[in-house]
Image 1 (cartoon, helix red, strand yellow):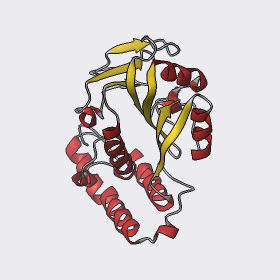
Image 2 (cartoon, rainbow, N blue to C red; image 1 turned 30 degrees about the horizontal axis):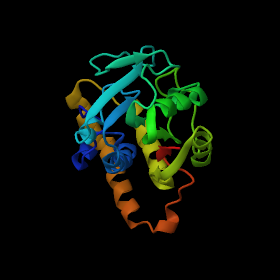
Image 3 (cartoon, helix red, strand yellow; image 1 turned 90 degrees about the vertical axis):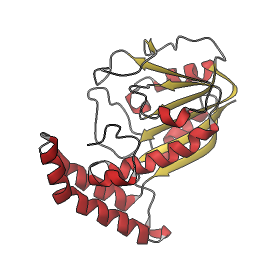
Image 4 (cartoon, rainbow, N blue to C red; image 1 turned 45 degrees about the vertical axis):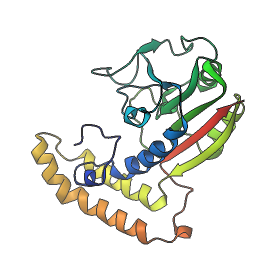
Length: 236
């Protein structure tokens, strides 16, 4: 499988079982990241997989919590925090980026005011969080947000919506879940054996889904079931 599963290229269809969900997320983040400038905080950065999209900014600082659902091995965390107080002064950052983190934050209504505090007036927050995806990084997986729920939460914590998007659509989600189910039962080692089974059992479904998605008319791409919420919001 790929070294950085988050930066999805077209050829990863031959090795990446999460190709469908990662493809849509990558496109939105890569596009919206261009609207973040200056000093940027990556909230819940982990290994900073999306750092290549922020080479244009002045400074890129990674923040994470020490105790999470995975070991912080070979991760590029610059600062740890206690899960409540972000250890920076008010109006410190021009922008904050956070991807696939808010579902792991049990006290989101406490953390969003902290993000608001460290952002400069008019500063932007770009974040993503899943709507349809299995539990992960257990036991630190606490929430799934609908597009309406996440909008309400950020608005009542001092932000206004600049852009709001959904990635994927009904058919893609159904097929991604089928592929994920198959993936659970495939041997992962040695890598060559996994690649062989991927071409045999996963690749046909991926190619079929990409092809059908291309042909589906917009009205059939139902967005009431989708992968991720992607929001660009601004401090007010």
